[in-house]
Amino acid sequence: MKLCQSIRFCTSADGTRIAVASCGDGPVILRAAHWLSHVDYDLESPVWRPWLQVLSARNRFVRYDPRGCGLSDRHVADLSIEAWHADMDAVAASIEEPRFVLLGLSQGGALAIAYALRHAERVSHLVLLNAYGQGRQVRAQTEAERLEAETLVNFVRIGWGRDNPAFCQFFTNLFIPDGTPEQHRWWGDLERITATADVAAQLLWHMQRIDVSDLAVKLRIPTLVAHSRGDMRVPFDEGCRLAAAIPGARFVPLESRNHVLLPDEPAWAVFQTELAAFLGQDSFEQSHPIPAAGLTPAEAVILGLVAEGLDNRAIADRIGKSVKTVRNQLSVIFSKLGVHSRSQAIVMTLSAGADRRRRG
Image 1 (tube, rainbow, N blue to C red):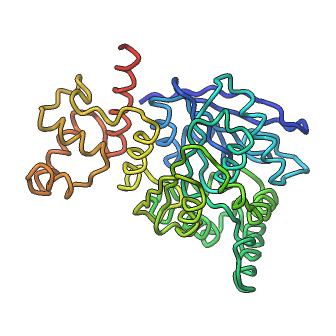
Image 2: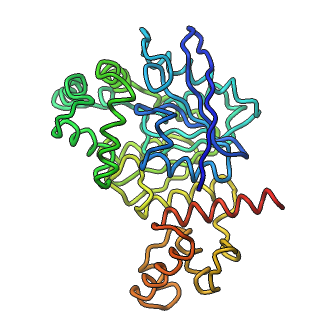
């Protein structure tokens, strides 16, 4: 699936240049900035590229690099959360559409909550994934927890982006413990090209002091909160707290240890299905998933169930076949589609559905 993006720049209130990228066409999804971001490098990423493919298949997916990182201005004196809020205001102001979906991953969730409260007229839906309302220092209840948060900042300052495999493995396992060797190598490279160790440490210091708990309870926007049960970066309970604080929020637990969901894990398809339902977009279309592939009716049904997020055993139970039979049929389906994984098949299905809607 060919993926193209356009990159432009906008200017924050203090003159800082912010890099903004967009992919796809349709309703806008704006992703609030998070710690690791490089809008140009994302296209090569085995971690982020699947996100771009899926979210741009039926939408215009807009994201930006935070100050000090990626293609945005690197040499910036003010790295405070207040400056991050101003940057997001500038990016949002550059979007011509009157309303958009706001997506907050990790600390981007706090930015998204604050923006949605300030500009409720512009946010149609709020989506929070592995996000938190209070940073580590704010939610710390013991001296040991405060020391742990402080130690992590110092660890970033001395170990960020180094070739030492011990440092690299530590940081990578906080975000994608179940990633492949390729994804782990790429994550280490991302650290080196995204920001300097000093900038990464400063940003983390500020993020640990985030507190939007008093803002969350004031939101009156349709909100979806999803969180990985085994998230090693942000505890599962933080997602529960956010969902409980935001009136009417829908909460979706995800069976994953990854802070950043990976395309080959079941939680990935579960989240994408929940997101499509929440946004009122068509679910994965089963009747004619990809006509040119020549799938049989039985294969089309199985592909539809894959797109719904079901694993092989659940599919076998649904259609009354053995797990081995389902596995063999999936091999045939993937061969016909010319893909190698469930995530690629889902992306292709989404893209085909988007093409039919544009033609129709």
